[in-house]
Amino acid sequence: MLKKFKADLHIHSCLSPCSDWDMSPKKIVEKSLERRLDLIAICDHNTAENAAATIREGTRQGVAVLPGMEICSREEVHLVTLFNKIEAALKMQELIYAHLPGENQPEIFGHQIVADEHDQVLGENARLLIGATELSLLAIVKKAHQLDGICISSHVDRPSYSLMGQLGFIPEDLHLDAVEVSYRVPLDSAQTQVPGISDYPCVTASDAHFIDDIGKAYTEFIMAAPNVQEIRMALAGTAGRRILSGPE
Image (cartoon, rainbow, N blue to C red; front, side, top):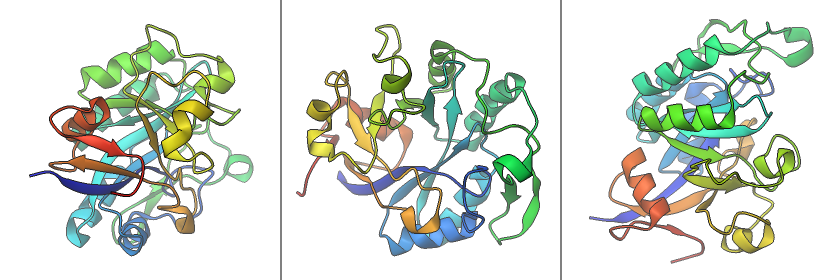
């Protein structure tokens, strides 16, 4: 049976150095419930270390949580990768960590807090998570798909760290599953407002770094279940699954 899922598929936790400390797994789930979200994804910069705790808390409180990452390619383009299982996200993380140079300087870039579902701090990640990996766009998309994940080009309407801002076009051999626009662009007109994305499924998400931004933008899907396979079908518009661009 198909039903509507209200989804914010791009949320950062306190592990992202540019995020607020209030973005703990527990508080993210609580705010998601307050905003009546059915499905969220944790997409920290170049890491998935807070995803498992958020999944556990989401399971306890009744919010579906997908593990993901917002990966920065060597072209300095941000890509959101989403997975069904934490194991797949952690395999992606292994590749990212092996190609992520540098060490974080908290006094400059911010703290990178690993936390559990009880708001307990487990430690800090010392890697330069805010930096660019040594991996190409093509390599990131290919690996995400090998792990049965989805790859979405982040905030394509923005000039910084976006595919359109950095390259000005989407390469034909870059097999993206979708593109994402920020809250500034209405989803129902995004494909005409943003040049170069008319051939791609389009979603929107909050890209929340602060607790009150969760659910500021979201996408409604018609699907059978809140998982990657169903999202993939909705992006393709198959078997009745689809994206809603306005009220239904």
